[in-house]
Structure formats: C-alpha cells, structure tokens
Amino acid sequence: MADLSEFQHPRFARMYERISAESEQRGTAQHRDRALAGLSGRVIEVGAGNGMNFGHYPTTVAEVVAVEPEDHLRTLAERAAETAAVPVHVVAGHATALPVADATFDGAVASLVLCSVADVPAALAELRRVLKPNGQLRFFEHVRSTKPWFALVEDALTPLWSRVGGGCHLNRDTAAAIRAAGFAIESLQRFHYAPLRFFPSQAHILGIARPGT
Image (cartoon, rainbow, N blue to C red; front, side, top):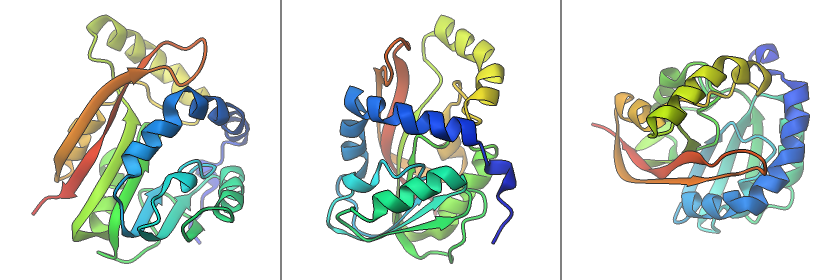
C-alpha cells in the first residue's frame, strides 16, 4: 500500500466529522443529490471523506469504489458504507495515484475534494485515466469567487486556511482546471450558499464533464 503519512490530518478530520452534519442540513445534502443523480454502473469517488455521499448514490449504481487517504475519515467511511443502498468498497489511496486499472469506471466523482488536493492537474489526469472513453466526471466543488473584492480576500486567507483546514484552498478556479486537464464540460451550474453558520456564502460549481478525445 502507498505511504499515506503525508495525508494524515487527525485534528482536521475530527473537526470535519463534527461540522459535516451541519453542512448537510444547510444545503449540502441537496447538492449531493443533484451531483450524483443519473449515475450508473461502476463509479469511483476520490477523497470520499467520512462517506457523506454514500447515501445519495442512486440505485442504478452497481458499485462505488471510494478512495480516502486519511485514516480517521476512512474508518468513518467504512461505517457509512455498511448502510449504503448501493455496494460501496472503501479503499486506502489518494487522488494522484488511484489504486485501480485504466478505463474501468463509468463515472467518477470529485465532491468537495479538489480544493484540498495538492496537485490538481495530476488528480484530474488520474480521473481521466480510470474513466471509460464514454464515462463522466461529476464534480461539486467550492471555488474562487467571481466578485473581485471577495476573491482578493480569499487569496489573502488561503495560505493560512490551507494549513489549518486540511490543505483546503479557498481560491481555486476548478472549472478551468477541469478543462485544462482535457475534459469537455457538458453542464456547469454556479451558485452560492453558506455551508456553515457564521461563515459567508461561498461560490460553488456543480456539473458533468467527459474525457476529451
């Protein structure tokens, strides 16, 4: 198994465990439903965290391979998999070296994870590698604000926030990164909401992309 020591953030993992329930109640659960609707066949999910997506997969999905590098969150994901309506297999691994074969998945899911991946181009290249030619990437991510003044605030806060927030970056243009990785974006929704109380509303994107030819 790959060395995952650099991905261990026990304090952040426990904080995320506490705040994720509040986030679900403040709209994240509904956005997960939209992000995963219509998926079928074999699906790989990167950065599965504590398994919050598992209850939102439609029953048309035959199998989910959920990859999570952080030990505490992976343990929680394994528990969540036990009650999921679809078969979920939680495995240790990380987004830039997925432990699966080429072109073997009908769908790939990146959900609130690309903000914290150190090498986004490498992660997206891996997702292209494991998707079948007619497969699809489903993405749901928070991104850099389109409001110039707020984007500058995000730029200023990101160096500190990424150190205390498990590597999370507030200011990534994830749609541009997906296109740069060779995906063709079929649908893209932009919206704002505040996943947590006492935090400002954040820009998010949700959509579908296909591997380019």
